[in-house]
Length: 113
Image (cartoon, rainbow, N blue to C red; front, side, top):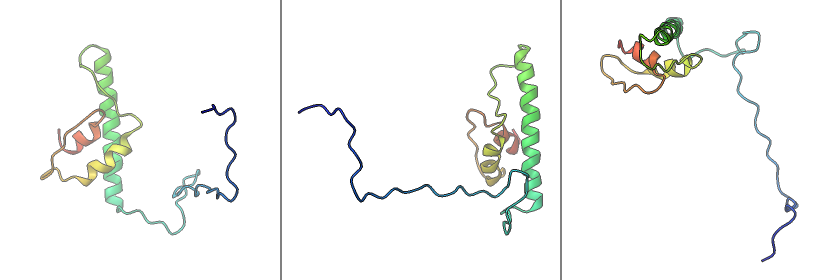
């Protein structure tokens, strides 16, 4: 078998598929797309935002304590709160279990831990 020295040219008649435009519900200036209604009501959105703020404040305090040598290792979820709060809001603290992993502080706060 002889080694290839040149890349094979695309076959004639192949179709190039362009990726679709990304779904964008919020413009750069903060305007919601026309006709879009969030799946959560205002109270649920406010609860999610408050949980993200509580998580950030708790994380900042924990990192401060860790740097003073008064707390062990902390995995701060800073910048990732929304990715954790969404699933955390889907669980029922009265019925469901949470097995926290790395950077799950918002989930633990939601469950009352």
